[in-house]
Amino acid sequence: MLQMIEANWLAFVIVLLIGIAVAWWLFRRGSTIQSPRERKPDALDEGAAPAGRNQALIDAPPAADLTPPPGAGTMAGLGEIIAVAAQDEVEEQAVRETEATPPAPSDAGATDDLGKIKGVGPKLVALLASLGITRFDQIAGWSEEDLDSIDAQLGTFAGRARRDSWVEQAKLLASGDTGAYEAKFGNL
Image 1 (tube, rainbow, N blue to C red):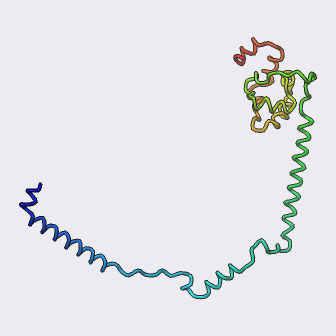
Image 2 (image 1 turned 90 degrees about the vertical axis):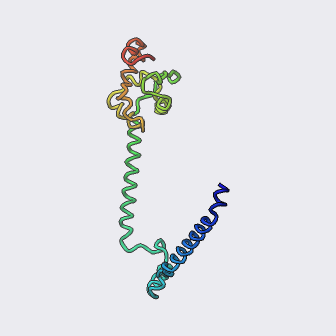
Image 3 (image 1 turned 45 degrees about the vertical axis):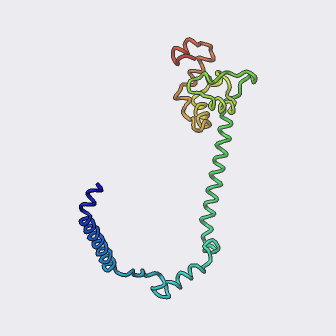
């Protein structure tokens, strides 16, 4: 490579000078084509009216400090009446659900493992216990109305009692017929 440069040094110098000349020409050409920067207009260039309007908005009192127009309280009063009526209805429903809850077991100390029922996990066992349901015979005695009442109290688990046949499972478990239970619902 060194021998090639020594032999053709004059050609390399000429190519270098041509490259510098082209770069200088492009730089000069680019700076003359470009127009000077123009300033973009803003709100103050439009005159005093927009500036005065903006200042008026800044100086205006907040909307929260304004008094409502006459008659505006009427609608708020209706909203309050509806809210109170809805709260009363919720409270009445809670009383009806409490009254419709199946009775607690006669032997308060004895409980069954409700987790044996397919579809009843630890959270449902705790929820059922909070509702006073701790024995298979309680579930086995549920009527359609009892199922509706319990369903309304199960929250996100609503519908599980019917879907998983809790009453049928509880009847078999309460009677102690594990063979029939395992034949229909699988191993315990």
